[in-house]
Image (cartoon, rainbow, N blue to C red; front, side):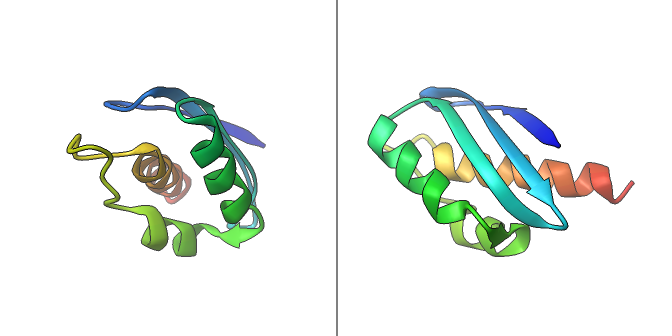
Length: 85
């Protein structure tokens, strides 16, 4: 199933991801830096959701207090919180 996260404070506008059994099967970052976004998406594919959150949470881009990878982590945390309700 596809999920969308509307990003805040970064160049990308949203992140679309798919998760099956706590494994990320696909990620697409809409907007932002194409090369970096593509690299992050490939590195996250087929990884456990908790491992990706731990790796990406808190990454800063140019003093913004967040980044596209950090926004992905926030989206995954939001997904987990909704799933656990």
